Image 1 (cartoon, rainbow, N blue to C red):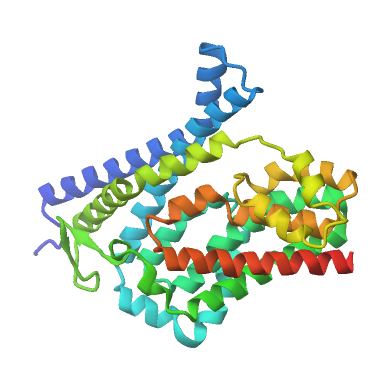
Image 2 (image 1 turned 180 degrees about the horizontal axis):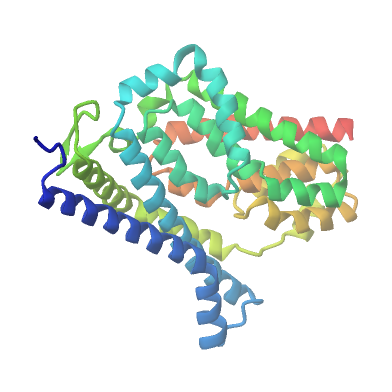
Length: 351
């Protein structure tokens, strides 16, 4: 009677492989979980830095966000690359493209709502989706919706301003994400994506994922993809986060009330232009929105400002530059910015 069990050395190799994967996953999770507490302890308790000052807050922000986004890049790129190894790019595009793209935009925007990423944190997921062959327009819907609309912002907005503004905010954010992603997808944006994002490599050579690969090949692909992409984008990552840290906590209330007050017919456009250089998530910018609302500024102007901060931040655009070429970044800003400005004026007319 012949046994179908694999040879003992092969079974031992497989066991070691999955033990290493499990240990790496546990280490990643632990590092992500303690990241914020670690930097708080080191900077405040060990080095005696006051984290309530602009300097202390900015240093903490830079170190915490650099590690957080690097970990997200490592985790998302590795997992997506391994998953991508089971399906060729062409097959994925055929499945998700064409007439299904509109539905894909809606689903991607919905996925963005339940993933509470800030704008820079959403970039690693964007890279992973594009690398997996998901249409760029669909992926852009996710990139817009993820920071723009999330459950934390919804809960805070509901508590501060009630049901009406909250419903309008969610509807407007999803509409912008879906329509902007769909419109950009009609412009053949793939030609403005850096080629390395689409390539699958093992041992430095491009391979076809539809060809039979072993688990060792797939894991090697994941490791190499992480190293390749991190090597290409790390300067942009640090520049973007550094800029965000430099302006972190800056609350331009006087500038805002002077140039984007209710007496200025261009207030919504000015609010969007003020919001783009800033870097925060929706929860972080809501206290400023509440303070400005108490000073009498219209809700539409304030929601446009908040949307610009979380969906068009300058650090995000710097990070995106490594994977997107300038024409697509310009179109992204123009389409999303136009939608935000339009929503701001609509809200001012309705509320």
